[in-house]
Length: 89
Image (cartoon, rainbow, N blue to C red):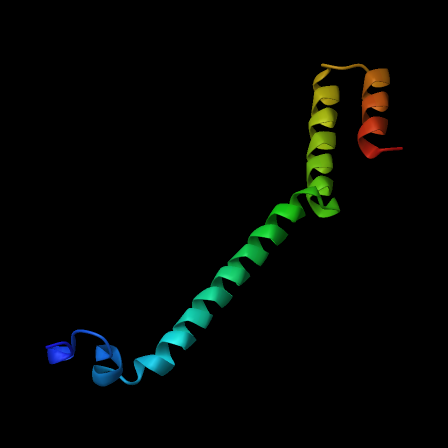
């Protein structure tokens, strides 16, 4: 009774002989995709501390500092000291 209508042990090999070739290829493709996604996630997370990201944040901070000085919220001495600290000089 086993093996009737494609059921039971050996049914895949009897009904779909190409599955023996296709399934390992699909499995390897899925493993490769998973590895690529992990590598991209690691690279994206490690990029948060890069100089390019901080340069944009520093220029934005300097812009805000200049606006506060222009509006008169801070005096010249405070502006100079804060600017020097932001520039890392």
